[in-house]
Every structure is written in C-alpha cells, then in structure tokens.
Length: 133
Image (cartoon, rainbow, N blue to C red; front, side):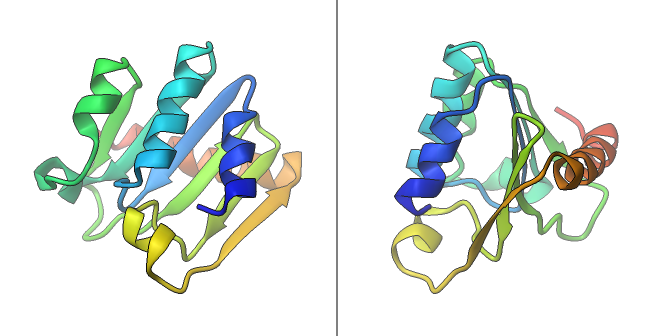
C-alpha cells in the first residue's frame, strides 16, 4: 500500500473494518495489529479460501486477538475495502498483498466521507453477519 495510505491506517483512532479477498501484506497486517494494540476496534472479514493459505498472517492476527472471520457465502469474496473511523474508505483494485504492494499495477482510492463510509460499513456488516470464525 502506498505509504500515505498505510499512514491513514496507522492514524485510525476508533475503528477499522476490513473486507479482503487476500490479506498477505506484512505492512498492512502489522498496521492492523498496531491499531488493535492501541485500542482501536479492528475487525477483519476475509475470503474463506484464506483458511488454506500459507501466506495469510492468520496467526499474527489471532495472537493479537484481532477479531477475524471467514466469508464462505460467496464463490469468491473479492472485496478490497478498509473503513477507518467511520469516515474514510480505502478501496480499489489493490488486493492487500505483498505482490500488489511491490509488483503489480494496482489502483487505490481514498474516499473521505462519513456518508460513503456508512454505506461501506453496512456492506461490511452484511458480510460479517454470514461469516464464521
């Protein structure tokens, strides 16, 4: 993730909600754990295929007690969304992976809008409601 976008994640104060198809980026996982450690309410929903991924940092998140669920309701839960403090949405083609970060051509969009964040948060909640640990 571009440093300015990763910086946005490190500045979260109250909540972080993640919907991710993949989550193998060490900097992003580290930023999520750091946010959780400083008292931010971090919750993550990922595609069910990550249960079998050797690259997913499941152990890092679970050791840090970051709430993590898997979305089995879709053939592919191809989401790429982070909602920060109910006011900033990070989305785009960028999978939250080291490959996307260092090798791929990706796009990332930051939307600073509580109204848009509320729409994304409702979608996050929908996916969380049919996900499992």
